[in-house]
Length: 196
Image (cartoon, rainbow, N blue to C red; front, side, top):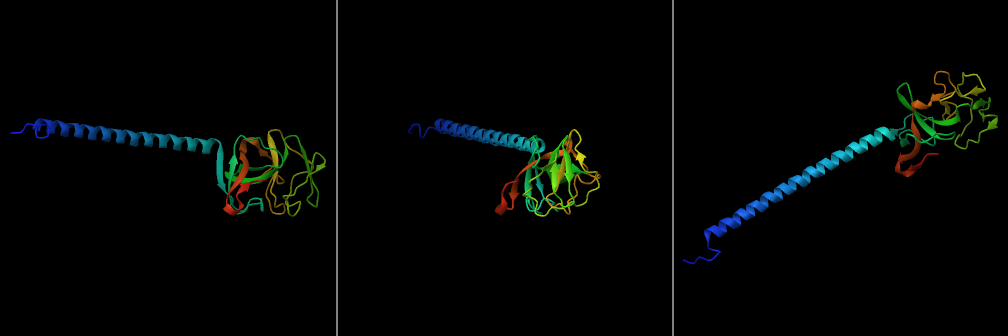
C-alpha cells in the first residue's frame, strides 16, 4: 500500500481540520466586521440625531408670509447658535408652531411704521428689496415701538397679511424662542440656494 501524504488518512483528516478551522476563523472575522459596521452605523445615526436636534432644524414651509423668498412647500434649513441680525430670516416658536419671519430690529431699537408701510428703525428708513408690496397691515401696537431687551422685532415679507410683531398677540420674539437662522432652501431643486 502506498503511504504517500495524499493517501495518508491522517494527513487528509488534518487538512480537513485545518480547512474547517480557517472557515470558522473566516466566519468569526465576517461576524466581527458585521458587528463593527453595525456599531459604527449606530454611532453615526446617534451623531446625526444630536446634530439635527442641537444644531439644525429642517422644516417644510406652509402658508408662508415670506413669499417669494420662501414659498408654500419649500424645504428650508435653520441653524441654531448663529447670531441673528436685522434682515435675517428666522424660525421661531409661537404657540408650539414654528413661524418664519424677517428680523426688522434688535433689542433697544425703535421701530416706526408709516401708513404707507414704510418701516423706520431708529429714525432710519429701511431699504427692503424683499418686500413686493408695502403695507401697514394689521398693527395694534403703539408706534414708535421700542424692542425690549432679549427680543427681536419680526415681520413677514407679505406685509398686508403677515401676522407678526405688529400685533400685541405675538409681539417681539424672545431670543430663547428662536429655533435658528434660516440659511438655505433645499427644495424645490430649481430654487435651491441661500435664503436672504
